[in-house]
Length: 211
Image (tube, rainbow, N blue to C red; front, side, top):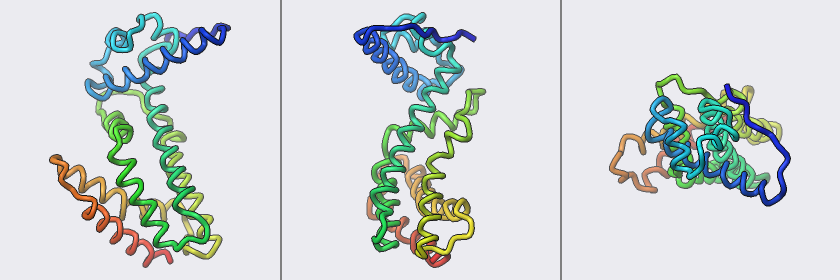
C-alpha cells in the first residue's frame, strides 16, 4: 500500500492540491459507478481527472483508499441531506403528522432522485470485492433520525421504546416503499402524487402504531 505524501504547502499550492483532489474524487466516482471497482484503473481515473497517476497516489495512496474516500464523500452528502431535513422539518411545536410527511416527502422528491443518492446505491450494490464504508459511517444518517425520534418520545409525541426499531419501521413504510416504486418504473413515470400517496399511507400506519 502506498502512503499518501503529507508536505507543507503555500496557500496557493494548497488550493491547487485541493482542486486536484476534488477532480480525482469526481472522476473516480463516475468511473466506479459506471465500470465497477475491479474494472476501473488508476490510469483511467487519472486521465479523466486530467492529473498524473503519481498525483492520484500522492493524494490517496492506492485504489482501495480512493474508493473508500469516494464512499465517504457520497455518504457525507447524504448524511447532510438527512440532517437538514430532520432539523428543518421535524421541528418542535409542529404537528407531528405534518412534520413526518414533510420530512419523508423532502427526501423522496429531493434526495432520492439526486445523482448523489443514485451513486451511493450503485457503489454499495457492487458484488465485486470492493471496499465497504465502515459501519459507523454508513449508519450515521439512521442515528440522526433515531436521536430525533427519541426526543419526540421524551416530549410525549411518540410512544417509542426502541428508537432504532421505530426508525426501521418508519423507513420501511415510507422511504423504502417509495424507492421500490421508483425502481420498478425504469421509464420514470411515477408521479409525485403517487409517491405522496405512498408516503401518506406509510406515515399514517406508523403513527397508528407509535402515537
